[in-house]
Image 1 (spheres, rainbow, N blue to C red):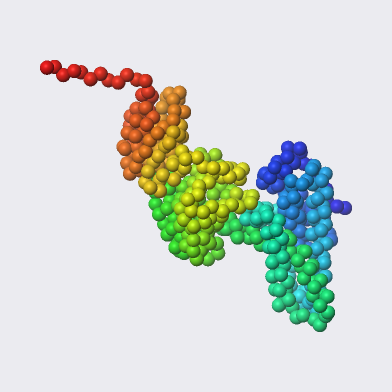
Image 2: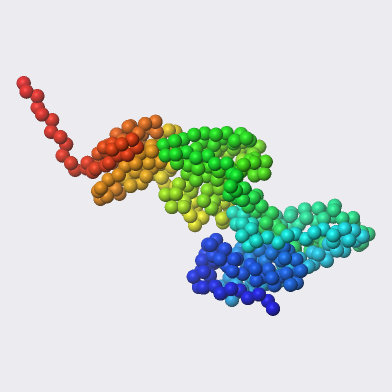
Length: 425
C-alpha cells in the first residue's frame, strides 16, 4: 500500500511554499521513514530507498512554487518517489547487462548501509546550501555527473560483446538515475565541512570583549579575529575540509590555491584568492554582514548563491534575503579593521552594545528615555578613555567610571553649562 503523506496544516504548507527551510525539515521528518519503507518494498535496498526518497523531496522542494495545494504536493511527491524507484530499477537492469560475465563479482559487492533520518537531513541541508537553482545549470551538472558515473562503471566491469544499443540504453538509464546522486554530490562539500566543524575535537579560537588577534592556518589562510568572536575549524584542517565557522567578526584572506568554506549562521561563503570581512554577532538578529576587500566570493544563504567582487558590501537577513548594507551599519561593522570605532547616527542603545564588545566597557543607566538618541562619534580602539570622551560629546551624555570595565551614564542634553566666574580686575 502506498505511503500516505502526513497531515500538513495550512500554515505549514504556506511556509513550505514560501521557501522556509524549517517547513521542509518538518515535512521531511514526518514522511521520510514511511516513504522509504514504501520504496524499499520495491527495491529491497533500504539505503537505495532512502536516497530515492531524499532525492524526491528535493525535487519537490525545487518545484514548490508550482504546487497549488496539499493534494498537489502529495501527488507530486508520490510521482517523484515512483519515478526514482523506476529509474533505480532500470539502472540495475542496465548494470546487469553491462556487467556480463562479471555479474557474480559485481553482485558480491556489499550493499550500502542505511543511515539515520538525522544523517539524511544533514545531507539535504548541505544540498540546500550549495546547489544552484538555475534549471539549465542543474541539467548540465546532472548530465556531466551521469557521464562520469557511466565511465566509472564501464572501467570497473568488463564490457561484453553487445550491440551499441545496449551501451546507449545503459548510459540513458544512468543519466536518468543520476538525479538524486547529483543532488548529494553537489552538497557533499558543505555537508562534510558542517559535520567536521560540529565535532567535539574541532579547534576553537576565542577573543573576549576588548580583545583582538590574528592567526595563520596551515595552508596560509590568514584570519584576523575581532572582539568577542569565536572561530572554529576542523582538527585535521586542511586535509579533509578547508572550512571555518565564524560567530562574531573576522577578516579572512584566502590564497588562490585554496578553496575555503566559511559558515556564519545558516550562510556559507566560498572563497579562493579573495579577502573579505564577515560579521554575525548574536545581537545582529540573525543577519550576516559582508565586505569584500579583494577578489570575488560566492555567498549562499540557502537559496541561489550570489557573487560579490572587491569593494562590495552585503547584508544577508536571517531568512536568506539579500539587502543593501546602509553606511551607518557598515561603518560600525567594519571600522575595527582600521582600528576605529565609528557610529554614524546609530541609536545610543546600539552604540553601548558595541562599546562592550570592542572596549570591554559596560555602560549602564537608570534613565532609558534617551537611549534611542542618534550618536555621531569616531574613536580609536586603543583606549577606552578616548572612546568615553567621544561618546560624551557625540551623544550629549556624562559618564562616570564605577570600576574597571564599568561606567554609569546620565543624560547631559539640555543641562545648563556651569557658569564661569568673571575674573576680578
